Structure formats: C-alpha cells, structure tokens
Length: 316
Image (cartoon, rainbow, N blue to C red):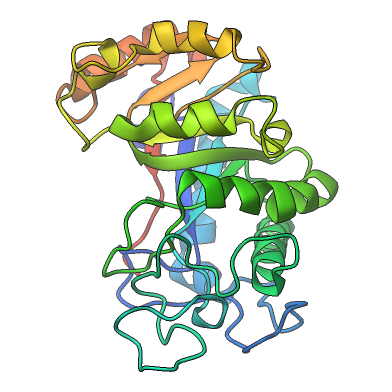
C-alpha cells in the first residue's frame, strides 16, 4: 500500500472500482438477482461479495495510507470512483445470443444496442428507474463500510457491446438515463457523489461532451465531468490536434462558448485529468513515466506525489 499510495511510493490518490462484476472477475455477479424487484428489496446491502473478496478492505487500506501520508490534505484524501459494467440480467433487453422471444437477457455478458436497459431510458422506464436506484443503494452500502465514493460513471465502455459484462448506450440514451433517472435520484440521495459521462475511448469524447455538456441539455445540470480511456481509439496524439480533432485546450475554449458551466470538468480514466479548466495530460498508454511526472507537476498533487489513476479491481 505504501508503494502505491504512500508519500514514499507512487502517491496515487485516485482509484476506480466496479459496481457488480467486470471483465476482471472469474464469474458474473450482481447485488440483486431477484427478477422485477423494482424497489430492490433484496439488494445485498452488505455487498457481501466485495467484502469477502477483500475489495472493501483494499479500499479502506488505500484510504488510510493516503490520509496518513498526507495529513495536511485530509479533506482531499483518497478519491474512488465506481463504474458499472452491467446491470443484473433481469434489467437488460435480450441480446442476439438469447432465445427468440426472451423477455430479458439471460446473462450480464453482451448487450443489446443502442441501449441495454430492458424498456429503454424514457421517463416511464421501470427498469431504468430501478437501475438508478441500484446506483444509490450501492453508494450507500459502501458508505456504511466507511468508503464514500467520489464519483460514479454511467457505464464502462458504453459504445462496446462486449462479450463480457456490458451495457451499451449511445450519447442520446445515456443523456436520457441521467436526465430522467440517475441525476434526480443521486442529487437527492447522494448529492456529493459526482456523475461522469462517457468512460470510453478518446476518439469520441468530443461528440459525447458537446451533446451532454451543453447547458440546454436536460442532463447537463447533473453532470460533473467526463471520463475517458486513453489506450485505444487512435494514435496517442489524437487529442492534441494532430488527427483532425480539437486539442483539449481548444476544446475547453469551445466549451466556454457553449453555455457550459465553468466549474470543474474532470477527465480521469486512463490518462487525463481536467480540473477548473486546467489541463494535466499524460499519454499513459505510451509514456507512463512521462505521464506520471507531468501529472504530478501540473495537478498540484500531494507534495509532488503523482495524482493519478490506480484501478482497484480484483480478479475475483
């Protein structure tokens, strides 16, 4: 823990974990397997799998190490975000691999497109409403174990109906899910937990952000930032303007004339961190040493420690 999170080690202060199972797990699991349990009466409030596998203890130890290493920055502390890979199967629309006439997906693996939620993400969707409640109960369950999530993203890799645990969205459906369901419930039950959109590869970040961060979009008032994966989706210079895409400095300027609030818009999964319109960029997929050094310098990390991402996922 000291080598990863301590002052004498790498000094990580941002972590990520999965809600329900992910592609690092040996088997799929969910915290409510009861079909059509819309109020989630059978939700496992102890998050027993994560407790027994050591995930909760790992996060608690990481948090303790950060607090002890950087006592003057105690208010900042260890920031952990959670991302789902898939809802339980009973919330998902059937996929092409499911039996003809199936009412819902058989497994958490794979996804229907353009959105995996069984009855869509409109205002009257019972399954989208229940999935949003699932986020809230998951955040509460972890808080009861002493872990307050800094943020959640809507979905890991929403553009990819992966053969492992997955749930597809396009920008329009993710925006509708936030505006109609997740935003309202988290603003009431967990107002301090930030909501991050996208959480996929860098080549499509401009399209998603321009739609969802526009102040005229009903989801925008609930959105705190954008998560992005750095390891695929084009050359490593894609977002510095070399591939015909606005570089991030110019993109920030564009956001400022798009009715976008000037508050923080953090990007953090796999390589970038934006805060208060200041840019810390590390090409971690190609130059991890450079990325760590650049972020440590630019982000104002703890005493020069690297404020960077460490994925806290266990193969369990």
